[in-house]
Length: 273
Image (cartoon, rainbow, N blue to C red; front, side):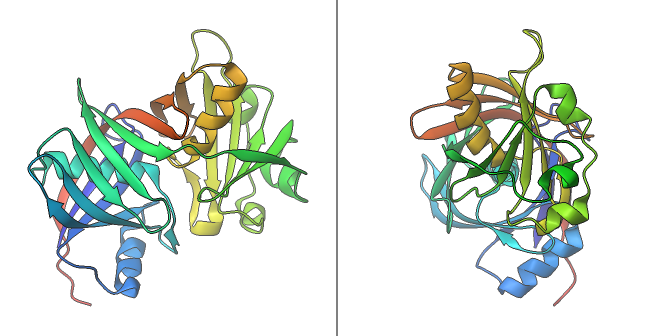
């Protein structure tokens, strides 16, 4: 089996969020795919099976695995999968379509200047009471806490400013005990020269203490900050150690992320099961 590793939402190598992409002729046993994801030890491994090779647009089935679990939606590994389809597998046209089990249909497109677009569902969130232990686990008290709706049921902790998000030093063990896939810490940008909003994503419950750039979280964040800032085009920055950026375009029912992608390696899985 071929394996590609891609830095998604990156301008250069060693930035953004690395994802593995494994093209398959047919689906493997779930347990084997989970073991491959664990062996890769990246936040996500994407497996894709092509179902249509129409001249205008290829279609794939897509599934995502962290080192410990299959997930319902992953943005950066979807962008990476589209990038691999275009640059390594020869997909024609300007878009690649992916069908998924829980997140519906997702589309990755090509734009000028080595940029790619990722079409995601726009997902709303609801204000909730601060869960017991959340503030202690994050190391700071948020202004507000929200819960995302399916398929992105993450907690959102809203803070006063970007510096408060940057300064968080979470207790990952405590965060893993919360009833959520992950916790997003976010705030508006500090000034006109900064991104419109910033975030960090913590997912120890699914084997990812801190994610470098989390595409699926921007399904929620695009909805939240578009409403609060009164804009449909927003610049986003994830404040991880590696860092990652995207332009976020918000429509009535969809969120489009625009970002770069960089191939890190081409490989071959040679071990048998």
